[in-house]
Length: 247
Image 1 (cartoon, rainbow, N blue to C red):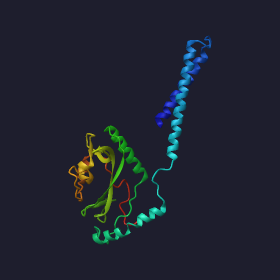
Image 2: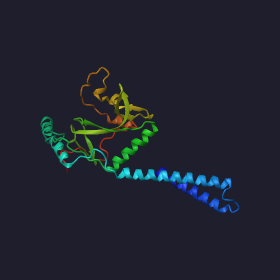
Image 3: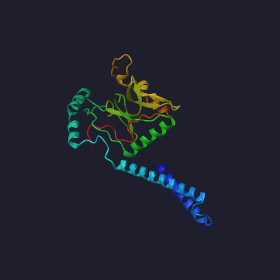
Image 4: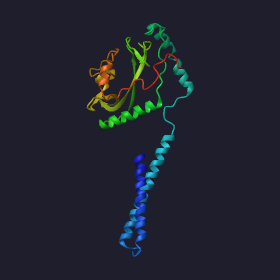
């Protein structure tokens, strides 16, 4: 949108310059070839400016438009509490957290809006360098290992060990056996696209032999992740940790 605004400014300046030039041509007749060409140019620029203004208006309307897939609070309440029994089952099976307190399954995560927006722009910028167009984002459910320790303001916190979380990755649209799919990806240090199904093992639907990939837990080596300068995978975007209850 900023580029469109700059283009409008450029065309307006050109139009004023042409008008000024015309006003200085005192000796010219109204039907001279020079004036005819200038009038034609002015009309063309006016048409371009009009079209650009219409595009800007459409962009502004799109920003005000209500997004798709907004759900009502009653339905949100229904599906939220449909998870209650599963939460009880998880609490019973896991038993205790890393600090030997009664385990409470994760029910919500908080993400700072500015951090989330910064992440989206980061993905777009890095993907542009890699010459890949993100089609969206995919959220992957995951589980912190039992040995997970979080360093929170200098305090070693063990209570998030074994907790459910998720990580986010951008997707690229590809056709698999004639079916369009949005596959998660990241970038290596040379800005080469790496599909997560190949990088860390994902999406049982894509097994070539038609079999389902057996579910399992992935151990994340944090030291390796730090070496990936262009990784696009996000977890805990300046956010609060997973919580058993919303606070």
